[in-house]
Each structure stands twice: as structure tokens, then as C-alpha cells.
Image (cartoon, rainbow, N blue to C red; front, side, top):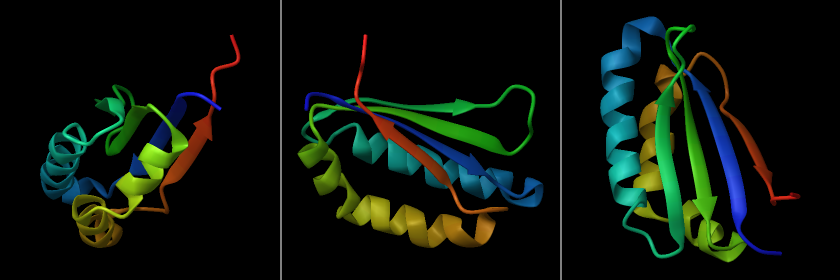
Length: 97
């Protein structure tokens, strides 16, 4: 199938932003060390406070699958859940052009 592109959207409660940023930074730093991770960038929405998204590029779906079982992604899910306004939205796909 080729490289896997992912955009994950997070909406954090405004009173939890400092904690959210720290949790996100740790996730990004650890994930960038993973085999098959070609891009893992944290972006803060400039117009909507508390909205962040991660832009990911993985060498393959298998590499991403391995990522989902790592300790740092499990820690992120556990620690971020109470800080989120709603469930994260995740979009996955393959380049068409």
C-alpha cells in the first residue's frame, strides 16, 4: 500500500492546556525515535484555543500498528483522556496524487 498518512485532531479543555502540551511533547519526542516514523509533527490551531493536531507519516501501516502498542502511546491515551473535551478524531489514508 505504501506510506501511511495520518492526521489526529485533539480538543483539550482550556483549563488543561499546560498539562496537555507537556503530554503531547513527550508523545512526539518518543514517537519520532520509532522505526518507520517519517514525520510526527504537533500543530496548534491558531484560531481555536485548545485544538491541536498531529500530522503523521509512516513508512507503512505495519510501522504504525507497532506504534499503537508502545508504552508512550498507551501513556498518552491514559493521561490525555481526562483532559479532552471530546474523543480524538483520526484520519488515515494513502497518497493518491
